[in-house]
Amino acid sequence: MPMITFMTDFGNPISQDSYDKTINNLQFHQMTCSCGHSGTLTVHAYYDRGVKSGAGAVRLHICRVKCRNCNKTHAILPAYIVPYSQVALPDQAAVISCYENSESYSDIMENTPSIDENCIHSIIRRYVLHWLQRVLSVGLSISTSPLFIRQCFSHFSRQFMQIKRTPNILFLTPT
Ligand SMILES: [Zn+2]
Image 1 (cartoon, rainbow, N blue to C red):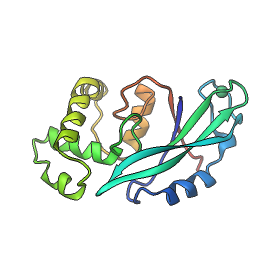
Image 2 (cartoon, helix red, strand yellow):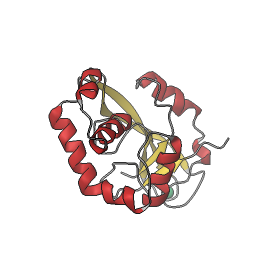
Image 3 (cartoon, rainbow, N blue to C red):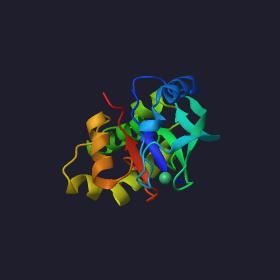
């Protein structure tokens, strides 16, 4: 399923409540579908998805929109979600920063008990296999800033640490 990602404030805890609030404020009519048409997306359905957060996992009802033009549905994802991964983007970025600076992962594991050593190893493996060269090739420095996320979408048409090629569009709220 193609995806549309919207920016979120990573300082806020991950919750259904904050997801719903943002969805209610999103201007669906301003969004562009992966088929290139704008103003063709309407809310279609919801599905459940887990995101690791703090001590456990949060289940989120993720909104799907359907395009009147191409009939495809798109998941509407907050920017803390890395498609096909349960670990939130800020946590993955923290693990990778530790890896790059040869620092200990103990603080991460302490603050986020849902992230264990296996989880950390698989994040680093995915990073080295799929993202290290990408990041180097365009000279990005990894962070959780809106700029970094925008750059990943503009250079690679996907969320940072997203592995599969499924279309993912960053929706920038007009300011
Ligand atoms: Zn479409």
